[in-house]
Image (cartoon, rainbow, N blue to C red; front, side, top):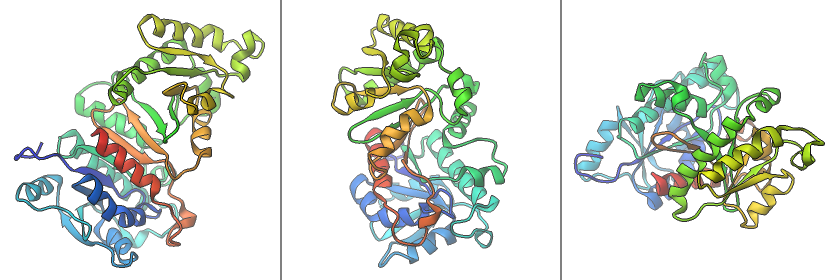
Amino acid sequence: MSPLGARLPLALTMGDPAGIGPELLARVWPMAVSEVGPCWVAGNAPIMQAALDAVPQGPRLRCFENAQQVLQALDHGEQPNAQTLWLVATEADPQAIRPGQISAAAGLASQRALELATQACLNRQASALVTAPIHKGAWHAAGVPYPGHTEWLQAQAAAHAGCAVSDLPVRMMLANAELKVVLLSVHEALRQAIEVVTQHEVLAALQHMQRHLSRRAGGPLRLAVAGLNPHAGEGGLFGHEEQLHIAPAVAAAQAQGIDVVGPVSPDTVFWRARQGEFDAVLAMYHDQGLIPIKYGGLDQGVNVTLGLPFVRTSPDHGTAFDLVGTGRANPTSLMAAIRWAASAG
């Protein structure tokens, strides 16, 4: 908390500066600060200023050197508002960054902004983290040794806690107004993802969901586990993972008092959840869970990382290089992520 005990601000990241992150932040800022209260953006000042300049009557920029300065300003009665975007400035090389193009400079810029905002959350200088999209190819070009936000945040949180990464498990959840889906595996090739479907991993994921989702639900939580194979294996005709791993994990979870059913045929479980039968579904691999979420549209989806010592959300879309500067990028998912973070942070 800040010295005067006020609610901590949200930390937002610029994302990949060659993508739509900066312009979406410029567009949602007035709505965000009006709805959820104090926020600040971590990113490069010239890049953010260029995004603000492209918005008619857009907010002006106020820069800070670090997150502590933001808290001091709040404690002195100052507030960000619809006319002034608060930015904690990070280094970048704007001359080496081209809109819509993958580059090491853009990857490094997004990583620096993420580093600053993450440390603010870990040090209790921000209430929650909302991340604009990064580009994994840009991170790779910059030498960042992580495939995405989820793995990077897990490593940073583990280092802060002084524990091994394996001792701080996290899960990716995608959510919209109709459906919540948690992924058993994230950014892994399908062959490797199948190997993750073990009794131990499925049970651990269900325990994780129960622990973290029940807090937000505020009441009984009913979970479902998707099968891996067509028709959940059809009694072993189409695979044995359901019999050997998923069903025993579900039984073990039920014995621990978790209200869960499964394995449920993956071609019906998400529809049943949308009808209200389940509060959340555990999907067996990345695309199995994300296709039903994204098929419903990218404008309301929110990416939530469960298991971090702070709330982290992100819009359910990528950098959209093809939309940069066109004015056609939809800010609704980013605003949904901000609302989710504010309500849970």
